[in-house]
Image: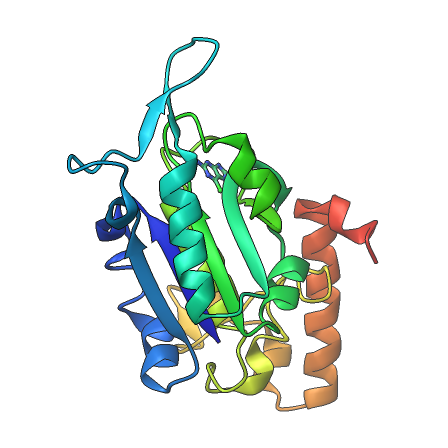
Length: 226
Ligand code: 6GU
């Protein structure tokens, strides 16, 4: 999969993709991430990409021309399955959306700033609008990093244990069960006995029950989606 990201703050995306699983995904050739500075397509030599909003009001709006040129230039090189605008008024990201997007080949992510982007870009280029939650961030970059991470780890071959993405919280609308590692006894806090017994049927049953209980307690809303 290839993910292109258009941003006015590429430095915000330097670190998130250079570590851990997403780093490995790129090293294995399973994921290519390309970050593009929107100012390459600025309207003047000062690098201007935003302007005052018509009708008045505080806050700048990202202009049509730089975004249109950026999207068109990149679209000549890659056939995008989706052109995604990260915005707090988009649909809220969940595991189902990440799963669906992980099946695509080419995604273009647009990070907004200031008051947002000119509505005509949304109407004429954007195919999906995604939010990462009901709170406002300074810009779309951190959301783009979240989305890229959520998608990247699902690509076949990225996780060492292929089954482990399937057992994540949310994959079946259940939270994951508790996990333990050595030592078996820490300050007299003990690991549940069933996990030490080696009876895999019992362990699976215990884990499922724990998942259900945990979901009932912390996220009962998920059970309605079963
Ligand atoms: Cl995608 N962008 C911004 N600026 N704020 C957000 C968001 C996105 N998702 C939640 N808050």
